[in-house]
Length: 273
Ligand SMILES: NC(=O)C1=CN([C@@H]2O[C@H](COP(=O)(O)OP(=O)(O)OC[C@H]3O[C@@H](n4cnc5c(N)ncnc54)[C@H](OP(=O)(O)O)[C@@H]3O)[C@@H](O)[C@H]2O)C=CC1
Ligand SMILES: O=C(O)C1=N[C@H](C(=O)O)C[C@H](O)C1
Image (cartoon, rainbow, N blue to C red; front, top):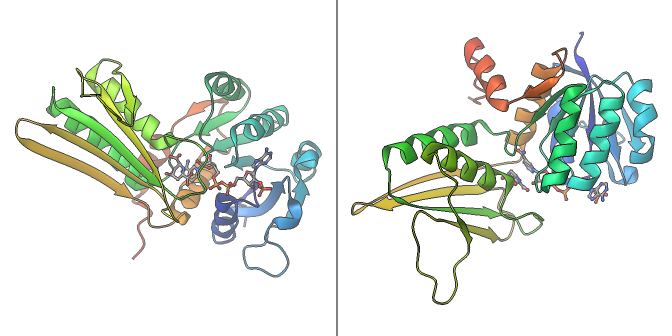
């Protein structure tokens, strides 16, 4: 076989479960170590997605070496994630990170692992959002002076707002405009739109997997670009593709776009029939 060995932190979470299922179906993955602060809650036994081993988060350090892990995939919460990544870096294990909601200090610590190991972080591992980002950059460049508003909708269990993807799209818009616009979160009372500010709206409802919408309006016309995730499986599959791509690379920071570029070169677009 000769695939690689993956550790999944936060294995008891929504994304953790999806990653276990995707890893079980991925021929490039030879061995799965699941880690959690609640290992008893991790899918185990005879379930088709059951990992090869489950450890408590406190045992992660020893387990990475003992189970000869190549790459750690983390979708958890910022403070736990920073600790998991430090542990991975100390063990020379590559890291793929999907967690969102870091503050600036946490981000700095997180990114320092790239000095030691290959590190790839993305706020969204879907191919469709990568395409949405390209479309948004192109529309913003083509429509200078148009008003822009960004709206994201997620399930009622999501902690961070605005979503990591919305923040990435806002950064993309700033880059395309060559300027950092003021971000107005929600709107209430006597608060008309001013200058080139960008309105940002976060909605939390039901079990919505994730929707991102960018509205550009001006010149008596409207352009709306929307991505809707149909399942969390797309994020898990993207993260595992990134893990496969990352194993064996030099220490440093890598982008999900590089993974997608490599897939396009080989004709693997991830599209189901
Ligand atoms: N980049 C991308 O493509 C995507 C990113 N995400 C991001 O992934 C992250 C996880 O999302 P989701 O799976 O829905 O969240 P969940 O709340 O379902 O899972 C979070 C996981 O983290 C664990 N956890 C929570 N708090 C702690 C803590 N203090 N110490 C250790 N472990 C902890 C939970 O453990 P326990 O089960 O014991 O509570 C659980 O396993 C979020 O930041 C989300 O935004 C989500 C989807 C796609
Ligand atoms: O928490 C989620 O669910 C998601 N989080 C990511 C984000 O914050 O952008 C990606 C996706 O939208 C789902």
